[in-house]
Amino acid sequence: MKIAVAALNGQVAEHFGHCEVFLILDDENGLAKSIPNPGHKPGFLPNYLGDLGVQVIIAGGMGGGAVEIFCQRNIKVVTGAKGDALKAAQAYSRGELTSSGDVCQDHHHAQ
Image 1 (cartoon, helix red, strand yellow):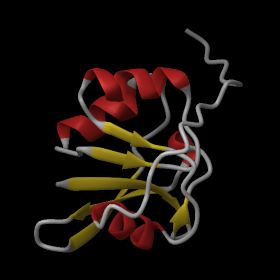
Image 2 (image 1 turned 90 degrees about the vertical axis):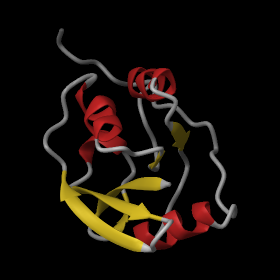
Image 3 (image 1 turned 90 degrees about the horizontal axis):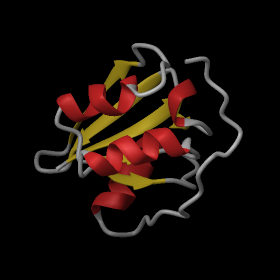
Image 4 (image 1 turned 60 degrees about the vertical axis):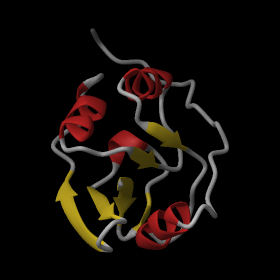
């Protein structure tokens, strides 16, 4: 399973779209890699990560539009995470991290 964590300075980013990198852990082989955030545009990142084969996304918070797209793509959304990004991914892999269900409500994007 591929688990992505929105990360900023090695920590779980408070907001999914504003992270500097996505830490992607392949829990089958234990390998992790960081890929730069290609840019925050409404609807883009969930599809981008889905196309990379991500099956779980972890972040501190996330807007409802992103949550909806992830759900449409059958990608598990985990919000409310904090702390070290790699440790968060490993905790999820062990079944020790669950979502708070928090969805950011204050997003206003130009269409």
